[in-house]
Length: 306
Image 1 (tube, rainbow, N blue to C red):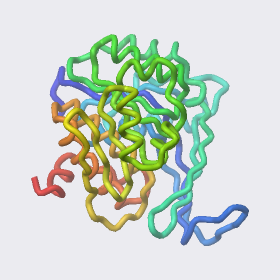
Image 2 (cartoon, rainbow, N blue to C red):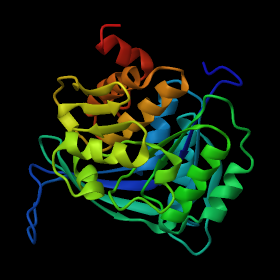
Image 3 (tube, one colour):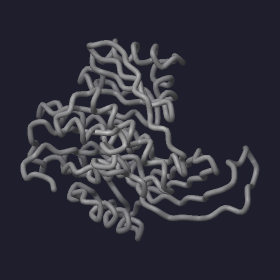
């Protein structure tokens, strides 16, 4: 049960409907792979992160945009069913709700193509409107993703800093950081590839150091089945993932970020939060679909032997 007036997770990001085919292997360029199994589920990095935080037991709200098509209701109903507050979702007339086309192979690896739809036209004005009705609670965490545009990212980041909230930015998919974001000293959580996009460097330790030098804030580089690397004022440490047999790795990074934000909002220190988030991300890969396998806090703690 969520305590009234407790710190919360505020996610600003994308919401999609995921159309997924489970196939024996991923197709090469120009190749057709037959015999797959089709599934339709809710997704989008921001929505996945919000559901992960809510399922973990922390009060969560989602701010984003959907279209005026039937898919919009699927997205909103799914978030509400997971316990996420949805009053900050804008319905944009004449716009399609975001859709992701996903192929998952027998090992749980995936290929994803996204039609951003309403996510791509979420404006800073709409984000400011949604946040204007939020009464910030001390200790809350603002989690912002890159499946929305720079204007929306900056509106959310500036609001978080103006209200002295912890700002976590998941720069996924990777693109240059918006002008002004670095000065707000967000905690960055790129994966290995995104960190390379941001820095031009390959080695995760080097990318983390380069990003920390710019933001003067902690950096967390996620490494998939390799866990995560944290670089903060105490130095660098590697956090392993749990050993699991994956069914579908889609959304594992979103599970990581949602649980990380939930732990931080609950008062845990960064390294503890990363350790639990890495475990939760591993557990999330055991079921098909980005939101289907998201674990509860008790499942994560049990898996860690706590």
